[in-house]
Image 1 (cartoon, rainbow, N blue to C red):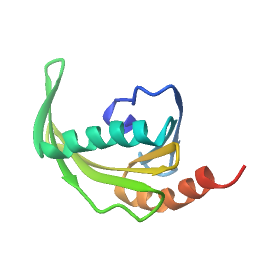
Image 2 (image 1 turned 90 degrees about the vertical axis):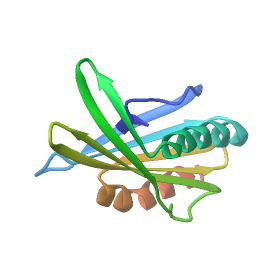
Image 3 (image 1 turned 120 degrees about the vertical axis):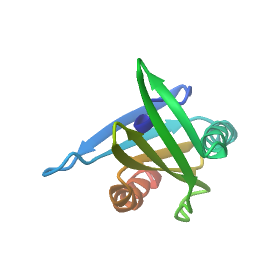
Image 4 (image 1 turned 180 degrees about the vertical axis):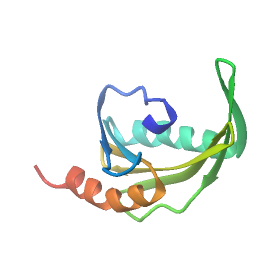
Length: 133
C-alpha cells in the first residue's frame, strides 16, 4: 500500500523499495503476516473500496489529485490474488501505478509501482516469500 501512502494495520510487516537506474521508476514490496482470514479480510476490503469507486479526488493541502482505479486480472499465484491500476493526475501530469497483492498462507505480499516493473518483479518476490525456510 506504499504507493498509495497507506499501510495495513497488521502486527507483522516489512517494507522495501527499489529504484531502477536511468529513470524515476520504483517498485515497492511489502510483506505482512497474520492469520489467513485476517489478511484476506483486510486486503479484500481495501481493494474492494478502492476499485468500488472508480474515480475520486484526493486533496493534499491545496493540491487536488484526480485518481482513477481499475480492477485488473492478477497472476494465479498463492492462495488469493488482487490487482488494480491506479492513475494519478495532477497539474497536467499523469502517473500510472499497478498494485498487486498475493496471499500465500499467513503471508501477504503487496507489490506496487510501474506496471511493467510490478509484472517483472512479482514472480521473483512471490517465489522468495513462499520458499521453505
